[in-house]
Image (cartoon, rainbow, N blue to C red):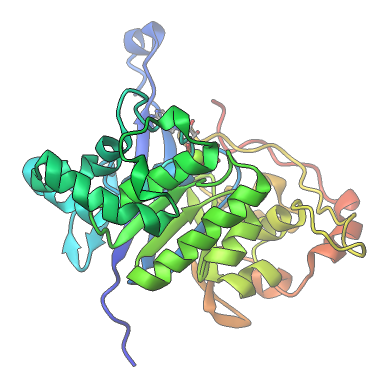
Length: 357
Ligand SMILES: Nc1ncnc2c1ncn2[C@@H]1O[C@H](COP(=O)(O)OP(=O)(O)OP(=O)(O)O)[C@@H](O)[C@H]1O
Ligand SMILES: [Mg+2]
């Protein structure tokens, strides 16, 4: 069976943020330098699927989410939506396209205007997309509120009258208001306490099933990814290092970075509680990075080749549905994180950082 057209497809997408040049750079004509926040990411999201995106802080998750929603324009690469190139959409065409992809931001306080009432907040995308009247917007919002578990009679309330969970429900309702095909959820529950997180995640999963919406779930919360996502992609310093089915990747990570990331997650199992895969070495800079694997300075399995040659994303040797970017995938794929614990203290010293800045 051939794959249907992906909903979203990125091909070699890059986002560079130029750094301000110092006076001495200008005088000496030193070229401007850039932060490579997202560096050549190619992935697809299928219609109705939930893709988890994990990685340490600063790995480029939010930047990628903004690219997917075309809140950023990529520096290089291509973004396709339902097969159409949307990389450089601008003006009215971009505005029209925006109903397809909505974003729920991490901070439900900062992302909701405190001066606006519920119907105005939730209805804002409806008005922007369709120019609906006040009465039409209120009717639509009223009908939408129960689907996120909010009462219909809160139309005229203000955000501060809601709990953190309530405000995040408002954000989800706002995203849903224009019937998007994809919602980028950027740490949607990290500001909430655990019981409320579970309620919101439950609702998101139900909404996905009811409405066949696709999600890009950006989070540090591996349990949330396991619960919501069908597949997961792992970012390290702006590059994809591993991608595959959520259970396979989380239970049998192949890339040494994924193993490290997951082993650092506290696991509520007495036998495994002490598990820590020691990751030593410096994190290379994102400013004009040098060639070679970005994880090489911290990797227990580093060989000379890793320091000079970028590993390409390729099918994992023992799991053909899995993609992994590691020269040593054949040797390290089956090594469980536990085994690394014993080898970690004898690891070679960290290599010099990949860039000086
Ligand atoms: N507007 C910007 N200007 C300059 N640099 C930026 C900008 N936005 C992000 N960056 C840089 O890009 C890199 C990736 O940032 P990003 O916020 O995408 O990471 P993240 O994975 O979402 O991190 P976190 O888990 O902390 O939210 C970081 O080094 C960050 O400092
Ligand atoms: Mg972020």
